[in-house]
Length: 269
Image 1 (spheres, helix red, strand yellow):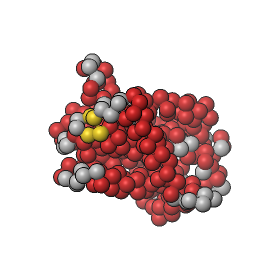
Image 2: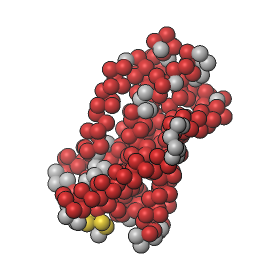
Image 3: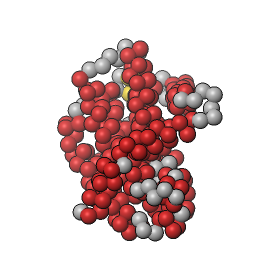
């Protein structure tokens, strides 16, 4: 409990600096580029086009999923992955090393570094979600009540990956090997987490059950529940309980890593 109180008090005390650093992180990410913020839109847009072309004219031959063109089915989960989750997996894990000067020179609270990185990435994610909404509207799929649960899935996403950022960044600060491991498995997670295929179509109930313990799968499917499947999150209470279990485990690991390593981090860096 003392560790939780320490982390919460650090966030409250440094809340102004957290948002300022989140803004600075966004500026730093796109500084020096002529297109600036536009690059945040260009990369996922190009990838969506490539996947649409490949799966429409190559691999899937224009097949639909639940009555939606594959590209529309793909977009919500892919944007959640490409604009936030994948960045938090890798950059969240490396954030303390990236901003080690805050720890070694300014004595900035370590626990808040993953938080402002999370806010930075989520700001980009919100901009891209506006693009997703526009795509659905232009293609004739207008907003309905199911879209109102988007903030719920966004909250789940932020909560889990901010906890992940704290846990993984502390370990990565102690060992570069751990950071390299995370970077090496990120692409595998993309293909194994149901970003590009429908987890609900897995024939094996056991495999499907295990897959729903994956927070990436839960969030990607949740976004599609809003836009595609038209399912309320409370109708899948078992899946939320599975996500909650994994989230609690992640929080416990983050608190353990913080308590165990916080005093050693400045010396290691």
